[in-house]
Structure formats: structure tokens, C-alpha cells
Image 1 (tube, rainbow, N blue to C red):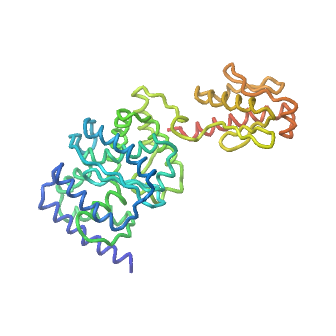
Image 2 (cartoon, one colour):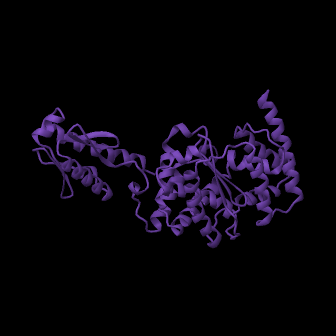
Image 3 (cartoon, rainbow, N blue to C red):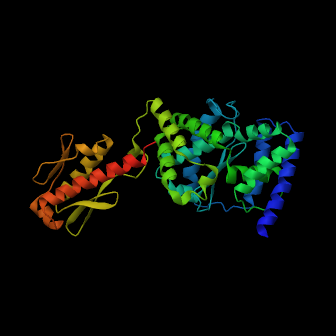
Length: 371
């Protein structure tokens, strides 16, 4: 019964929206700001804003740097229009576990706490915010509505019904245009062409604002392989496919930027934990080397991280047959009899395990980033 009621309400709202589109010439600038304000007013009735000052400051600081670039710089648009219209961007953090973010016309941008928990660096967060800024800066919602004006009211209603009802929204708020804009932005997205345009421009905005665009790539890569997000959250309005990830990778490479994922994620990092007179080197959370000498453990972690930055290949990780592990002329570890005893193994096996652990991480990363 609830679904039937929602469907009826959505169809009635769509009729109102179609009437608006048919009777109004929607322009960029103040009209879209007004639309955004109406949608924001409806959104405010359904959300819980985060009170944490540190979280809000982080999002606002990054967002405002990107917004400044968008308000001053024209970036080519493949969907919508690149005409620069300065907006007073706002960045609101919502208490919601969904990994999601969305943008309303005129620069009203919302970020869920679930997404903030998911990102692994400011660069990744900047990638998401830059993407949402592009939706506003390239006037995607206005462009969408103008495209819909070109078809009959009946066809428009059918198109929007498929979008809105397909998104599975549970909203029953006031049936006004502002709410429908909110529904499209949050639940259904702007369409794949708009998503790709937002990715493309986001890379330029990030570079000009001082952020590493690889953050957008690593975010997309991780999101694309996490099946748990397929049926809800950001997947619902930001569909990720291999082509979209590959496109981001290609654009970054074409701009001459080195794709070093370790700079924007926590994915691969050798660390040292010392306790009880033992120092353990871990890689991706797994112990790979134990020694009583903390300086040796720190040296091993340092070399591993340097080799990863240098994009070492699996076949370059070698053994010397006496407990030594090395690559590219650098010693990764020299396993002593004392070290082997702490690890409950022989020197040869302990060294082999270190080699295997590093190779496994490299193979895993290779598979995860093939696009």
C-alpha cells in the first residue's frame, strides 16, 4: 500500500513538474538558484545535519577551494553548458551511513557521513566534491529540464516516472518542483553522460585547486569493486563502470600526472608495530617480518614503501638464498637466525614468506586497477 501511495504521489508530482517545464523557459543563473533553494528547503525537512565542527570545516574548506575555481574558470562541458555563473556554494554534511553525495541547482551540495568515512584522504574527498561542483557549474539540472521540454508532456512524464520510481525513493514530501529536483539529484542522478562530464571537469578543478586528481581515480576504483554499495547509496545516482574508471585514468595520464595511488589511499603501506621487545612489519594489516631490532623493522618498512612508490614489479622481488630479500638493488630484509626463531620458521622460509607477501600485494593491486 505504501509503494502504491508513493507511486501515485510521484506521478502527481511529475504532472506538476511537466506543467512547469511546458510553461517556463528555464534559464541558468538566478532561476536555477531559486530552484535549488526550493529543493534545499524540502531537503532540510528530511535530513539531520552533522554538528561536528571538525567534519564540517574539512568539507567546507575543500569545497570552497573547488568552488572558487569553478566560479572563475571555464572548463569544457560535454554535457550541459560550460558558461560560468558564480554561485554561493554551500556544503552540508548529513548524518547518514549511505556512501553518497549529491548536488542541487545553484550550488547546494550535500555529503553523507558514510561517504566521509569511506574516503581515505582529502584528495579523494576533493574528487567527490569536485564532481558535485561540476553538476552545478555545468548546469546539468537545467540542461536536463530543457531537454525534457522538447518532448510532449506525456513522454516527459513517462521518462521522469521511470527515473523517479526506478530509484526506489520513500519520499512523500510536498509535491513541488523543488522536491522533484531533490529526488533527481539524490536518488536518480543526472545520467551517465552528466556523470562522465562531472568526472572530466572535476579533474581540472582538482588540479587548479591544488588537489591530486588521482584521488578521484582511487575513489572510483574502490567504489567500483565494493559490491556492497551496488544496491544503494552512491551507486544509485553515480553508477560506476569500467569505462568510467578507465576514462578518469586516461584523462589524468594525458595531463602528465603520475598515477601513484599510495599518495591518495591507505591501500598499501608497510608499517611497524613494536611491543614486548618485538617489532613487526605489517603490509595491508598482515605481519610479514618480525625482529627484535626496531631499527631493522623500520628500515624494512621504509624500503618496501620506497619500492612501492617506484612501482616495483613482482618479478623484481628476489631472494639470495641465505635469508636476504631484495629488489632494484635495495635490501628489503636480512632474516637472521634470531628473527627466524621469533617467526617460528627457518631463515629461508621466513625470507620466502616476505617475498610472497609483497608479490601477493602487487598482484592484487594489478588486478584491482586493470581497466
